[in-house]
Length: 139
Image (cartoon, helix red, strand yellow):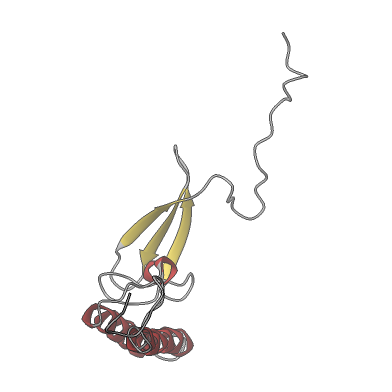
């Protein structure tokens, strides 16, 4: 009948209850994004400074317990924190032999990372395999 507190519906949250956490995370993510973009911009001029920005980004993400996107993690070397861009700080190769995979090798420390490719993704200039249609096959 009577309620001691303010009436809230089942799904409503009090104002300001969870408003502070997303703002802090958003600012932290903006800082991480800035460091990543700055590392890309500085890489042709100073690879050491780009490595410093990437290591700062990784340290800040660990300290704030934030997960980085997989695409960001794949472009930064885990050993030396340099950017793994083809031609700049990394070497990209496509390997077959069973399941197709991409091999990224860091030019600074030599560490290699392998990623599986999805079947629908093919290297440029390579057509998907075509075989005889089921109707044309000899019976």
